[in-house]
Image (cartoon, rainbow, N blue to C red; front, side):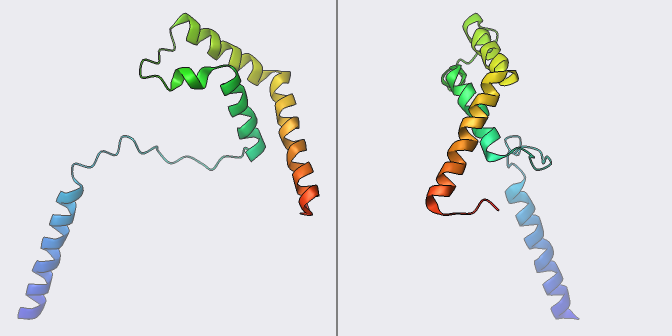
Length: 111
């Protein structure tokens, strides 16, 4: 009886200490869970290529990134136009073709 009381007290103390250690942990930077993406690797790479080509990546890396700045807004608009148009489809086709070519030259089956 005395041993179980000591063990129970020790476990409760450990639980309180563990909880206190994580009490001030900032979880705001942890993204909320979302469903797995249905995008292919090539689709993500094509999107990123257009983002970079529009110059938004360079601006987004700045500490003073301001999407209301006319230059930034223009670059974002250019990215959105490319993303919604034939530029995206062409970039995606280029990446998919490159992937098929790489698989064929390495002897990897696409099945």
